[in-house]
Image (cartoon, rainbow, N blue to C red; front, side):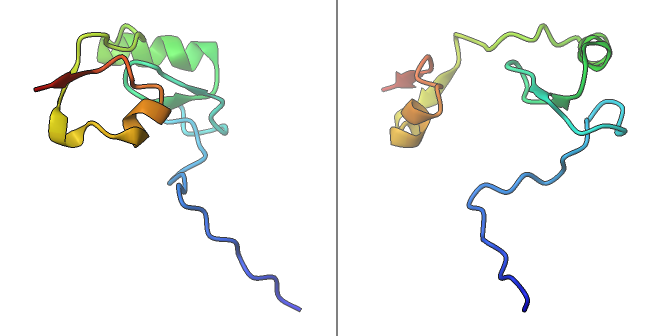
Length: 82
């Protein structure tokens, strides 16, 4: 018997590290969401892209884009632009 695949509402396009492309990713950069597998890959990503690895606290979203999903995703640090 074949098992039916369960549908995932948020499928991840790739499970490999976006820096080395050799190992499965374990970490996601808070600053830009790049997925990496190790500290050397994190450091390589930061050096290659000049990313500081920190989530921006000054982003402003238009009020039309501010909804419950933004609040639930932890992006509530964003201010709604009225």
